[in-house]
Length: 269
Ligand SMILES: Nc1ncnc2c1ncn2[C@@H]1O[C@H](COP(=O)(O)OP(=O)(O)O)[C@@H](O)[C@H]1O
Ligand SMILES: [Mg+2]
Image (cartoon, rainbow, N blue to C red; front, side, top):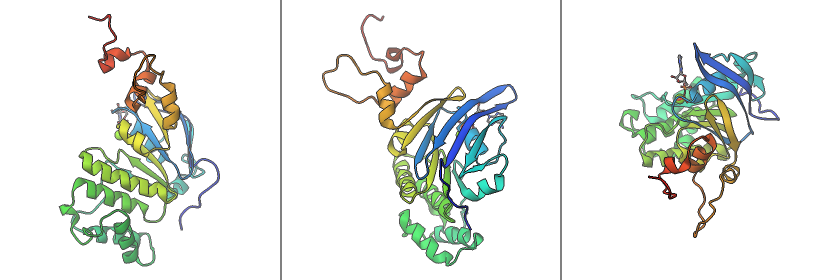
């Protein structure tokens, strides 16, 4: 019923370009995502994260380049791509009037799965929503809603899930709840492409992090690899790991770090 997982990268993006009128948003984006991993596409507001996700989800056509998901080319096999993916994030697809359990069971029924009630109960348990399961979604907090939305995206076992800024607009506590939900996804072998503006979110969740900046991927690596890109401080009494924010600022380059971080290095003013 679901598309089979394939050998090779779960997502492959090569030379992807997209403009809106004169605005060149993607200027040749390349990255691969390994099956079963969490990949964070990190970028500021307007960097082109949603544009990339929409192309991968077959909702938008690229101007140039190729992209494949689960081995299927988004341009030539869009139906197979759609069968392979689940998309969730900034918008929540949940029905407010139904309970959490009813929402889950409804999606399971729509997907013609056996025993929708049992599927709903299992997902409620996995996303710590069992107690709230019988309540209307309209009574849920932002974090609970987002967790339910992610749980719904799991029904049907899509091999690839896109989470476009899953914690946008959530308070810190709800954000941590959603992080647990995302870790839960990858723990079950699902490939997750996550977009975020939050450096800490990428740091917490991702196996690999790619920074999308001015239309290109300017850095792509594990957190450990990214940390190595950051030049170590010459004289430091206590050894301190650079934060992802410092790495980000260092690699986007051309900016005097002392001006950005406000560090006083002497000789200014
Ligand atoms: N349909 C559209 N028409 C014109 N400009 C758009 C459209 N969608 C997005 N943009 C612009 O493209 C840029 C990238 O948008 P987006 O991919 O949504 O970025 P992100 O998700 O990283 O915040 C932004 O400057 C945005 O205003
Ligand atoms: Mg976006």
